[in-house]
Image 1 (tube, rainbow, N blue to C red):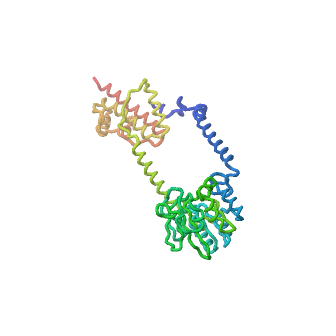
Image 2 (image 1 turned 120 degrees about the vertical axis):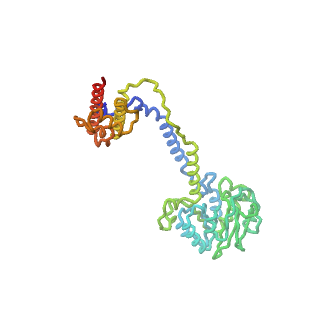
Image 3 (image 1 turned 60 degrees about the vertical axis):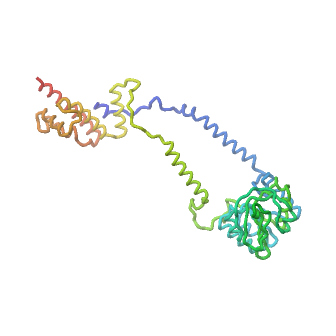
Length: 408
């Protein structure tokens, strides 16, 4: 027992430890699947690049693009230029220009403020495609986004010349309301218009469209979509098609923003709900561990192997106090019946009985103090632990020999 505690060798690798070959065999299918997905994604992106520029892009011939309306406008003498930053859009505005904002909701409040100031003084036309509540407040004051609605064929229901000439169109998307008396409200859906025209300064105007579907290549030929699109976008000889991009430096107003400031409020509430759901699911599915159940081992384990295994664990964990207590407890259990004390005796009773059997008041001639050996402080290092083990063996041998000679 002394040797196993002091000279325990380094733990060897068990037979259950997976080898490198086994790890490769287990993971190669997953790695192959991940590589296949990566190659497919790169190939698909390469095939989709080229002429495809995205939805509502006047350069794109995809079904969701707007190349057809740009070509029809070019045939009427209208020049279409694509810009991707707020500064470019503001710099090209003028009385002979129509500004089309493809996705107003992607603009930051700073961008919306800059764009509205430039468009209001330009004297031209501004067309907003399906703006939400925040975008309408900033870019079309006096207009409120009420609720989303289905896109379907709607009648003009107003006296706006461009709407009456176009007739029925496929519109909808978002329903709006306005408090501007001079506004034109057209194509009602559920009692609210889906197209609003507001007069602006310097003889300009602002047009709010609830849906951008009538400008796409696959929907332009339906109903009066093409007629309405050409009249709204071809009112001036120049058309500035603004596609907001993430690389626009004007998105920030120069102030430092934290990561949480950039997350929309809806995402914050969504993440909070997901976190609460995850905690509830963890509490629901958590395993509740019951009391420890002792089971018989399926094979016989030699005491020496068990002792050596525990010694390795104690040495690896540097648990000298736990090892010392295990040695002392085993010695106390063996000495108690020898000195005539009941199991689990009080420290004073066992110490006095051992000292009486040795014939001393607390220490014998060999310098063994029963109180310190059996109930003393934990050893400070490995050498002290070895000395404690030797002293406990010596004390037990002395008690055994003394008890043998004292028995008649």
